[in-house]
Amino acid sequence: MENKDHGIERSLSRGWWRALLEVFIVSSKLGLTSFGGPTAHLGYFHYEYIVRRKWMDERGYADLVALCQFLPGPASSQVGIGIGIVRAGIWGGIISWMGFTLPSVIVLILFALLMQGAQIAQDGWIHGLHLVAVAVVAHALLGMGQKLAPDRNRMTLAVIAAVVSLLWQGVFSQLILLSGAALIGWWMYRKTDVAAAQNIHVPISRKAGVLYLSVFLLLLALLPFLRQIGGGGGGLLPIADSFYRAGSLVFGGGHVVLPLLEAELVPTGWISSDSFMAGYGAAQAIPGPLFTIAAYLGMMIQGITGALIAIMAIFLPAFLLIVGALPFWSSLRSNPTIQGALTGINAAVVGILLAALYDPLWTTAILTPLDFSVTACLFLLLMYWKLPSWAVVLIGGVVGQLISYINVTII
Image (cartoon, rainbow, N blue to C red; front, side, top):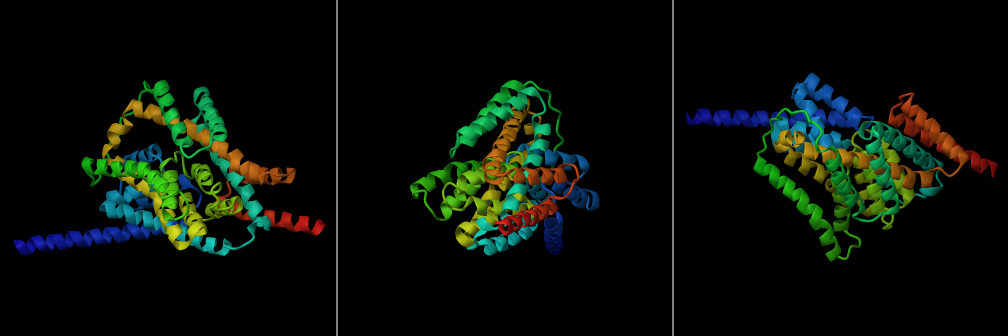
């Protein structure tokens, strides 16, 4: 009887390791091939995880996507983590995240190595990437506005959020802004009917969920305090604080992390505006989540150690939140009070992205009528010709270099 029990345990152990290996192989494939941003990522995930391998049913996947869009952080990465957890527990979620993000992390670290010490401000292709960033964010803003602020009240809230974001810039300004938007959303939409959600069966207890959520909140409060005690200057702790806070406050997708990171890194002198925008353009040209720009930024700030700290810090909130929220998803999604607050937050996110479109993007990129003309054409290619973002990045870089060459020749 004892030998039989040991045999069952070994069989279960082998099955778990096989599941982990399978999660890593599939997620790595997605990390190498998933171009096009979070919406496209969810399509790739659906085909690989649901259609081909049937790791979840259609309703369960739809509910998981809804949960990840409800939470702050990179939605597509959180969906991948959630599927990994359903498949192989907590370690399955970690392995799924590693497979999906590692390819783009490696590419962006290599890109940072090429950029370090270069006089990039004078390179035309860098200016071309600036123009691409304007077109890409304008494209994302239009889609988000249609979905998250489709009526007068929500668009009004979005515009107010844009104005506040531009005129009041501080360490905690966006946190206060999102909190205010949540209160307004709760007041306006708390009586809206909400459809019941299906339970997602995950190997996580509610006690464990509370623990993960508590760690998330503790780090969000503790890291700025420790940073102030340490003098708030250079070092790894300020990097961890800045990237963790950015990853904690991002609603609406990876593009919204741009103004948060820009406000944290450029004014402090950690990285120049040109280097920052070059990394943003590079992140658009490769597969995987846009949050992996943290690897490039950390590498530019403090080498490989900075890159590792930045990439772990910006994704850690997403991991803690998805693990903590999964056991409570049914009650959260069915609660009209929480849904009303989320409605207000989502509308404010549109405004924050609108503010980012103007500053830093528009103010640093659109300097001449030719810049506007090129950006309009790039937006056309994205919006109506449906070119993938990596192709538009390449076109923008080439056009920027050609313009620079023509200007130098004329001079």
